[in-house]
Image 1: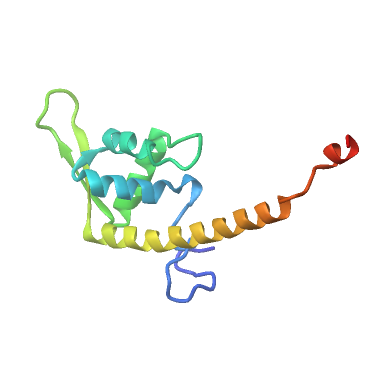
Image 2: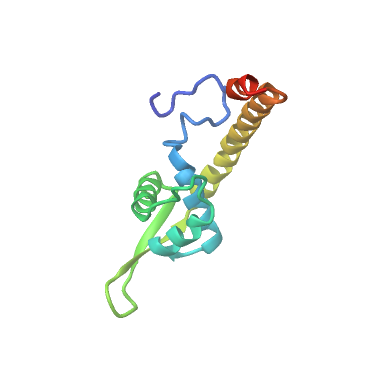
Length: 139
């Protein structure tokens, strides 16, 4: 669905407007950066690892891709830190628009959590007290 078009949620933010949901990298990166303050990409990636929602975790290149997209959309700003010896590092900070975007993500994530809880409850209800065919044949 094109960005800006909503899938029947009215004026509320939805996943259609929130970009790629794969592994929820965008809200994780925004939340970590907001907590850390001014940080470089590798620091953000390290902090994000503890919030990964899949066993695969978040790979560092994905974090940098999300940071670029967030910066292009005005949700983060970056500057080059040349004060240390060695190569310059790009440092990121969340903008006020980025905090608003993170607030939108909390709505979307809450909706997903409610939906997933519904699916989980349905699966448990369907499976409750049922035996798989192999177990039935062995009785």
